[in-house]
View (cartoon, rainbow, N blue to C red):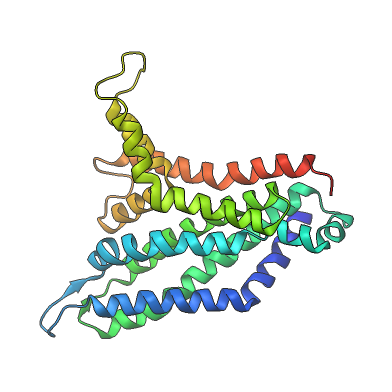
Length: 271
């Protein structure tokens, strides 16, 4: 199958790249150092893995660094080959443009997921030797959510890469997406909510529901919600179950919609 052939080649090229190795090493080192720095002082103290992940590693490192790595992994997926001229050679083989775009999403997303798991290995070793109540199941499960966040941003970045002609434009678009979701979303949603001081009779939903939707629409806050629910043994249960379902729906949307939009633009372009 052509899509799988493209995905396999991109996966191998990505995991073998020196840049990916450096990013994994940097992420792993930062998480390990952070886990060590916030450790409790004194051997009698215990510090649960769940608290470390939900209160420190997740909000500070996972939602900030993983999306950035995803953007770096995906931004030159299509535009880089387009600039170098190798894209014409790739399309001369029995590959459609859809195979190229979604094959690169699949291959680079898999490489990003593998890199995330590799990046959490050293922190796991650190947690084993410091005074922490280490829960391997919680740690592994949270790593799955971190990997899913990386895959979402790879998909968004590949979509941007397919929609533009140069790596520079793809990188600018990827950084813009990162800035919106990671740095500016709270300000953006605050402005939207703040623009309406009272209920809007014309809308069938309340302002609280709009706020909940805007929170779930951000993949970083969606993953944070799901990860914290998992750590608290309330995944798809409890008071936030509707928010969790909305978060999953939006994560699927952000994984599929940007590559589809990029493909529509890519299909119209004359190479």
